[in-house]
Length: 153
Image (cartoon, rainbow, N blue to C red; front, side):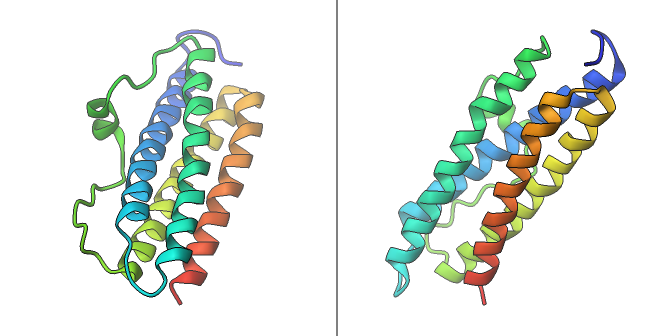
């Protein structure tokens, strides 16, 4: 693993905190849609969104702990999440079910790109543990994208 003060370590910590921000923001959006979805596919989407939210919240602690294991600080508040996330808020509770599915698919694609940045930064920093763990996160993200993409057809 990179030494303290190493640029590659700083890049890794930045990528991890960015992925953490995106994961927290996407978790809230997914739960929002879980609570507000309506229409003939209500039950199926309500369950799908809840399953995906559970998967996302399961990543949050691992992401934060990877930052702390690098002896750095992680996000501290909703404000710090907002400053670093690439996931846009969605407060319209009247979105159609189809619009929710497409938005979550596209946001998971954003998270997928961010996780790719974590993978690259972990490799550059020689952090094999993070590099291995992020493979699982990427796989989970790809599954969410697949399910949402198939649902949007």
